[in-house]
Length: 532
Image (cartoon, rainbow, N blue to C red; front, top):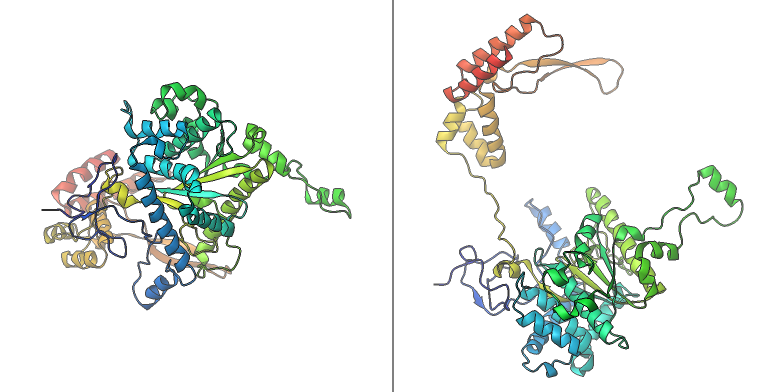
């Protein structure tokens, strides 16, 4: 008998195309039903979590944040249809037995056969990684030659013209943990080997700019450099041994998008700036666009038509040029939206400057969530319309590539535990049960605190704290409870502690120990002896 998702989440091999999948409800939750034959189609599951609050206001908020709003529904559905259509074409193309029918260069033929059939001694590439590289290859070498596929490139070009007028971007969606770095190495190897062995071709390049969202990820991507001792091309056998020397001819620059920010070359005070400016136009104190590119891109400026690879590409986009489809942003979220907009604007402005300087052939976007962020002018969570490949988190779970997430679930304490807590005098058994039903998390905190406190509420001391009133005219007095102490952590003595105060503390701990269970009494006695 077939089992449901929670009984058998893994259905497919990570090295073969998925042939079964679990059903999902409209909210993306697995159904308690047997698996379904065939591969899951690309579907958009909202990446924006719904509000935890219930009621009319919460329901209205969900309607306002609906990803398929009236103005975006048609384009969003068409993008998903394009992804599924490209996937079907790539699947049929992959099934051709004769490499001469693939319609690709001899170098690409060699790489595809190697990735699909080579006996790897180290880590074998997953099917999703090979499929992402195959999709980029098919769109570049095969689709432009066939008229029946002209509408695919027309859609990609229109999507870029509306959102990125100066760039040609292709987004590959892979779940977190599915191995985007390996896909980057495959794309670099494919482009470099073809550019080296066919220098007259204008489809390929051996100059690459890899942009990361931060220095931590940038440093991790050092393994993409052919000169690195643990580079993926040799370490993971992504390139045949006789082609490694040609891959070493690739020129790769790793950077983070912060490098695109123009730096100050002249530090001036406000008075100094006004003195130098006079009545003329404002003086230029930041580096020029060319100087910024020379610092950020280095030796790539000597090449033409660079290939750009964006890691975590959902941080790179141009704000919506016409209108604003976003719902009103709450006050606490405006700062986040502002940061997102500034980062995205800086990132894509740097790529556009590189395009104006030396030219950019293609921008490959890799991300697990290629969606527009809050503050973009698009609905938060709208899929990039230039996305051409999709391998979702559910696909990765069903193939055993990523671990199945498990969420801890708090339960109401049993009556026996409540009676144990009540014996310490902190809260009654019935009160513990009522509190646990209302808020299980607070119940756990109360249980933990009660076992340590172990004293009746009547013995809790109060302290008088001197505070100034809100007006600040004269000091005011207010009595409040001091921070709770427990028998296992005696009160910290002050610098002026005398014998009577220490004796008082030991007496108070002894009185508390007499009212606590035996399990807590032993530790209290030990601490009391240590304090004395």
